Image (cartoon, rainbow, N blue to C red):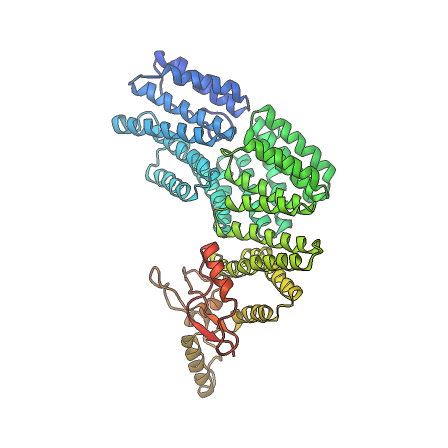
Length: 550
C-alpha cells in the first residue's frame, strides 16, 4: 500500500530500518505502478518484495510482506483473477493478526487490516458471496468505530460505505443502497471530491434499475464532472466509459461506440481486465440498441469465453442476459433460452431471478408469434404464462422489501407491471377464461382484503362518529398502528400495510395477504402458481388463510 491516487493503496507512516528499505521501496513503487495502470511492472516489484521477506520472523519484515500481499491482491482483482486475489488478501490478514497479537498497532497495522477487509469485501461481492461480504464490511466498520487512531479512517469509511452500497444494490435492497451511496458521497466531500464519482455511478445504477432514466443520466453526468481526466489510467478509463454510456442514453450511438472502444483500449493498456469487461459489455449493449443483434451476440460470446468461470459473477450474469436478448431479437429462440437459463443459474437474489424469468416469459411469447403449428404455438404461449404468473406473484410479494415511496413504485413498474400485462395478454390469447378470472381476482384482492381486527376498529370509529358530533370519520394513522414495532418475528396483519407511509419510522413487518377463493367450493385463485412462486423465489406470496372474494 502506498500514497498513490488509487484508494486501495495506502502507506503506513512508520520508520523502516536500513535492512528493509529496499523492500519498502519495492512495495511503494509497485503500488504506485498499479495505481497508474502499469500492472505488469507493479506485479513484478510486489512479487520481489514478497520474495525478500520470505521466512523472516521479524515484525518489520512481516508488516511489509502483509502490505505487499494486499497490493498484489489488488492486481489480481484488476485482472478478474478473484480466487488468487482472495487467497492473497487472506494471507495478508493472517499475518496482520499475528503482528497485532505481538506488537499491537505500533506499525499502523490496523489501517492495513481495515483496508484489507474492504478489499476482501469487494472480492466477495464480485464472487456473489453476499452474506460473507456483508459480514466482512460490518467487521471493517466496527474496527473503524472501535479505534479512532486508525490512519486515513475517513478514506476507509468512504470505501466501506461505497462497497456496501454496491452490495445492497446487487441484492435488490435499492433504498438501503441509496442511503449507503449518499453516506459515501458525504465522506467523499470531506476526503477527496473526485471520489464522489463512485457513489454517483451507484446512484445512477439504482435509478436505472428502478426505471428513472432521467435521474440515471444525471448521476452519470455528475460522475463525469468530478473525475479528473488527467488522473491515473484507471480514472481516465472510467471517465471514458461514462461518457460512452451517457452518449448511448442520449441516442448518439455512433459516438457511444467510439467512446466504448476507446475505453476498451485504455483498459487493455492498463491491464484492467474488469474495466475492459464493462466496456465491452457497453459495446454489445450499444449494438442491441441500434438493432444489430448479430454483432451484439458475437461480442458477448467472445466476452463470455474470456470471462471463464473465475470472472465476476455479476459480469457473467449480465453478459448471459444480454446474450439472451440478442439471440431472441435475431429469432434464435433456443439459443436465447439457453443464455437466459445460464443467467438465471448465476442469479442469487429473488429480484434478479424475477427479472431473468420475465425476459424468458417475453421470449416465449415472441417465439410463439413465429410458430406456425397451432399445438407448438399453444405450448409456448402456456410456457410464457407459466413463467409470467409466478414472476407477477413474487414481485408483488417483494414490494414488501421496499418502504413506501417512488423507488418502490418505479421498481414495481419495471417488473410487476410488465409481468401483469404479459400474464393478462397470454391468458387472453390462450382463451383461458378461468385463469383470466383468477388474475382479475388477484389484482382486485390487494385493495379489498380486510382483517377482522381492522374491520372491528373501523366499525367502532364509525359508531363514535355517529354519536360524537366532532369525531373524525376515520382514526388517525398513528392510532390505527401500534405505538411501537412488534417484537422480532411478530407480524402485523397484511391489510395494515396500507397505513404505512414514507414518514413511518418504526420497522413494521406484515404478514402475507390471504389466499382468495373466487367461487364457493373452488380452489383459491392462482393456487398452482402461488406454490411455484414460493418454491422458485423463496418468498411468501400468500398466507395459508383463505378468504371469500364475495
